[in-house]
Image 1 (cartoon, rainbow, N blue to C red):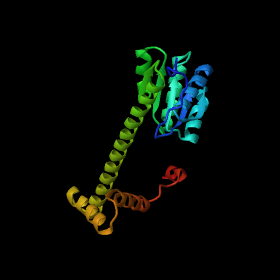
Image 2 (image 1 turned 120 degrees about the vertical axis):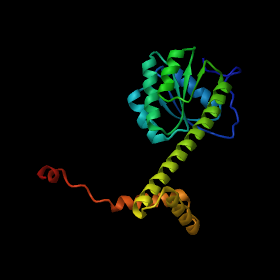
Image 3 (image 1 turned 180 degrees about the vertical axis):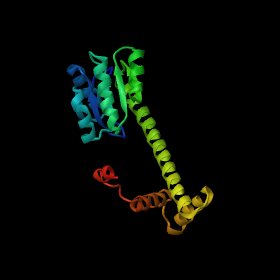
Image 4 (image 1 turned 90 degrees about the horizontal axis):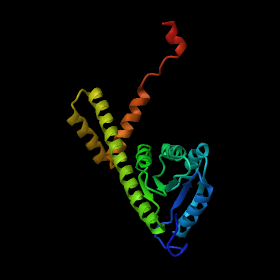
Length: 210
């Protein structure tokens, strides 16, 4: 049962979040909405149906999503999968009792945390930890993406100028320093210009005539 020990008392938090909640059981959905509101956050969507939750996530861009386990674990897992597919916010799984098998399946679908039969403050703690982990995850993803982009730009320079990887990186770094641009922005410009120079692919009909 999701509740605060002394009723629904408005809590003051520095961060007022936009929260999406989803549960197959409508009565659980309403109770959770009250708890989230008591913590000072805004419930921007309440979803029951799998076919609608993905579109709502994409449209509303919530800060965090809370998915409760209702009558069917498969239904809850599908809700999680649809939200995670949009990759716009972390998901926390809510359970009324311990269920290791469900938690394992939820983790495979991308939940960042779970909490079992907690009160409002435990929910807030779970949200705080989850948002921190999600921020670290996004930062790591960004770092990998920037590294891949720089490596791609280096490869283009190596091919164009017949130089090795070290010299290609020196070219990127020197251009970055001399023009006051971030290294990753220089790399992006090189990749974009390279793509513009690629010859257009022939039409399928032309390929068939060859």
